Length: 260
Image (tube, rainbow, N blue to C red; front, side, top):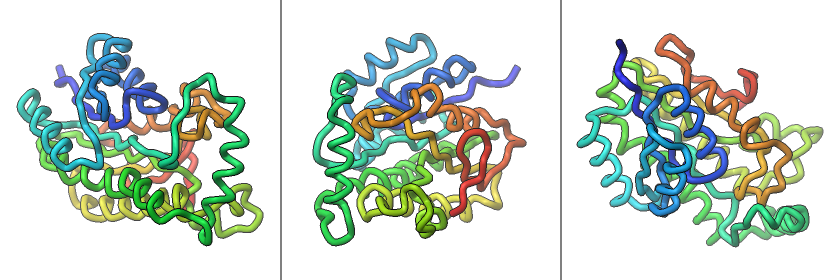
């Protein structure tokens, strides 16, 4: 009988991260639900039930990341799956599910103030700290644990809004909205992921980049058009790939390649 797989999903107390954690647990994976706020992580773990374990981790805090890695090492000695999901779209505000009616106006206003000529460098730094430096910091801390596994996989949750090829096309629907804060942070995350892929291509550790659908979550003030169940499908599919599954891919549902 094979040993239980151990996973860490960052940003797992809500949205896509929570849905991915639910599906992984349902497939027999023991999942550490990474959450900046431990109480929210504990509530999410309680919602999922056995197999879900709350873990405090702030991807912008090195001490928090190191403590999380040490806890996983002390409890399991390895990590089979890392899902770098934690991310933010802006540093201005968050919302609750009851505020969907304001989301369209907010998204339009935010797009106008997030162009190359108007973007706040302070806000850009905050978003990049979470979306770019965060996944790299977690990768560096968790890599020794992944090396202890015989079937390790890293899944970085990005977005097709980070595709330079797509956004360079004037006919692309999001061409006019490409800006230096959130979209470019995803472009940078893609580049960081490519660096991971290249570093690990001679090892047994698989690395995949995934774009969920435009999902209605706090990330976009619930302006998304897909449910978290539908939006999380590709992340779950790739996370559950076996040791013979592919590496070095950048896809959306279902297994559709995205140009870099």
